[in-house]
Amino acid sequence: MSKKAVLKSVEQPADTLIIGAGFGGLGAAIRLQQQGVKNIVILERADDVGGTWRDNNYPGAACDIPSNLYSYSFAQNPDWSRAYSGSREILGYVQHLVQEFGLRPLIRFGSNVASLTFQEEQGLWEVNTDKGEVYTARSVISAAGGLANASFPKITGIESFEGHKIHSARWDHDYDFTGKRVAVIGTGASGVQIIPELVKVAKTVKVFQRTPGWVMPRPDYASPDWSKTLFQKMPAAQTAVRQALFWGHESMALSLIWNTPMTALVERVSRAHLHHQVKDPWLRRQLTPNFRIGCKRVLASSDYYPALQKENCKLITWPIATISPKGIRTAEGIEHQVDCIVFATGFDVCKAGTPFPITGLKGRVLAEEWKGGAQAFKSMNVSGYPNLYFILGPNSGPGHNSALVYMEAQIGYAVQGISTLLKGGYRYLDVMPEVQQRFNRAIQKRLGRTNWNSGCKSWYLTEDGFNATMYPGFATQYARMLQRFDPSHFGRVPV
Ligand code: NAP
Image 1 (cartoon, helix red, strand yellow):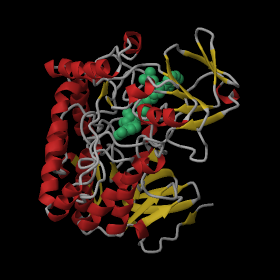
Image 2 (cartoon, helix red, strand yellow):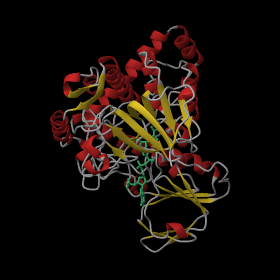
Image 3 (cartoon, helix red, strand yellow):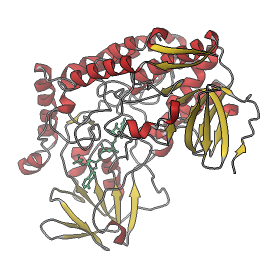
Image 4 (tube, helix red, strand yellow):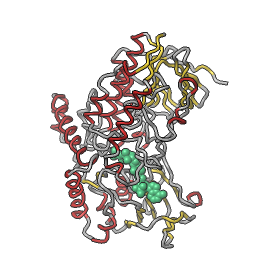
């Protein structure tokens, strides 16, 4: 039997319930409070804040977007130690947000949401957790994160392996790699950060590559003291740097999202990087991508190729046939015996489902409606599921700019919607189905012309090639689209 949750400092029902205490959820709480919405509760399934930056703490974990851009514009940090900060420092920034904006009393840790159900009569969301707690709220912001659930590949024999298994997003810091024979499966954004660190300590590192990615150099450097002092004394200087970084990344859309003359130019830069760092023609050939740049996420690393050429490192490009008790057997029949397998194999992404069952008006079930591919209006609202906002929802993904720019726009939009509901005396606001359909027809048409849909296989696409992940445009366009919450797009039901 479920029990009503005890909400110490929050009145039931909450004005807004936020799912997830990562960047998105905490940013939303800050902005809501600043707009006078104080009755907020945040449910977090783990025992600490930070989301992806709490979970991804493997050696070498860092952001491939510069820190001055990968942070909130309303909470700039003058003290970033590097151009591209590591995960620990980013987590520190998130913890600082909690402190600075007094968010901790709002957070219920260890509260894993099991279901969301909309009660039409009262205009309330009922939120159940797997501990049997029940919360109610006028609005819900789902900021559960798209890359939250680590994914082990379906390789025959994976359970039979007798050595140690570690996933990049659930790192085992107690395991000592010194002198160990290690295999790494996966050469995506996580793999290229882990491998250079492992070759420093392990006896051998065998890298199992299925698809070589496009790699660009990462111009990392330690922030000089003068810039920290300057940013502390003159925040406008940091804003100017942020703007320059923003527009630099924004211009990359022209090469990464669409196939333009810039695409060929950026491919040339990446090939030159490979040529410069890898002298052996055979290895270079093994590392040369066979798909258009931008189709999968572009990798940023200046130490991945050098690491692959260290004496104790070997790139294996034969497909994996099975995992055996002693190691990995490849298709040509060789068994590579190892002590530990590191899975840098990515995440289970809910492209066609929802992270938990969501029941809307008249018993509609969102996972059913999203079976053929998720869709929402402006990536934020779904018709039939009123007063519910998604952070990093369907078709909101950036391929060329900072996710935080997108999130900031989403948060601003959700705050406007929630304020409209509370101030307008509405029971609920439900986006009109034809508005949502029109929006998605246009989005899918635009996606057809992008590099993501140019033939490669990536986590952006469902099995049958539907792209419910990325936004086919500039970050500027996305932010402009979310600048104003327009109530005329919504069915408005009075109290
Ligand atoms: P990912 O991009 O999905 O890469 C997974 C890797 O595992 C790929 O190389 C994939 O090969 C390989 N793989 C999967 N199943 C396999 C199998 N059965 N056999 C052999 N290889 C297999 O995952 P990720 O590297 O963790 O990155 C996921 C996302 O997280 C990124 O796209 C990015 O959005 C985010 N991320 C960001 C940063 C950052 O710096 N901001 C850092 C890390 C991650 P295929 O390519 O052939 O599928």
